[in-house]
Amino acid sequence: MKKIGITGGIGSGKSTICKIFETLGIPVYYADQRARKLMNTNPTVKKGVKDLLGLDSYHKNGQLNRKYIGLKIFSDKTYMAKINQIVHPVVRTDSDRWAEQFDTAVTPYVVKEAALLVENGSYRTLDSLIVVTCPEELRIKRVMARDKISREEVIKKMKTQLPEEDKIMVADYLINNDGIQALIPQVWKIHHKLTNIK
Image (cartoon, rainbow, N blue to C red; front, side, top):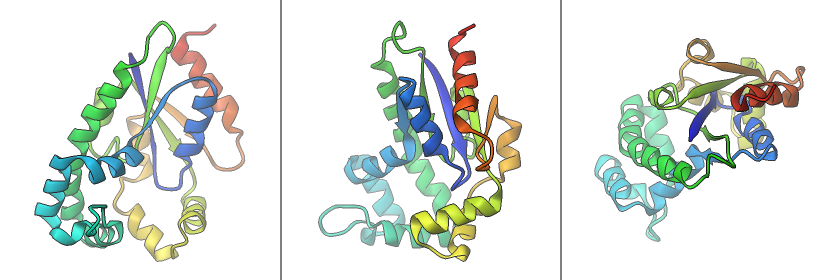
């Protein structure tokens, strides 16, 4: 099964692009959403997180204490790297199992959407990488509106990711989500190339 990665900085519009691929019948694995679920359900991940950040990492009901963990990892990049070392291998295995369920005769490729495909090096395990680009100021405004957080908080989150230019350097395809260029034709063009439609 051909695996295509979609990544981009926070607020770039990765999910919007993935929704377009889904309308074309392409299955999408949302790695960040799946990681959150696995952090709540996978015993190995839960133990690793508790060992690293303490018992306050989970509420009494066993659910992830996202606020506590967010404060920890965004205040110290070493925690972010260590959390990623715990979670990413489990997500990679999970996404591989997910992709195996699709019949290549029916599904020409699958998409894996994740914010940190380049940062964690997992883009190298994929057949192609699509990077969604977007002007920084527009990304900041989008995230402020979506997450109801301050400009400073958005910038802090952006600093935990590689600059867009670094992601572009390893991209096979680019999608410009600047609010001016139409997205559907850009996705359609890539879809044609990936399915070898003439």
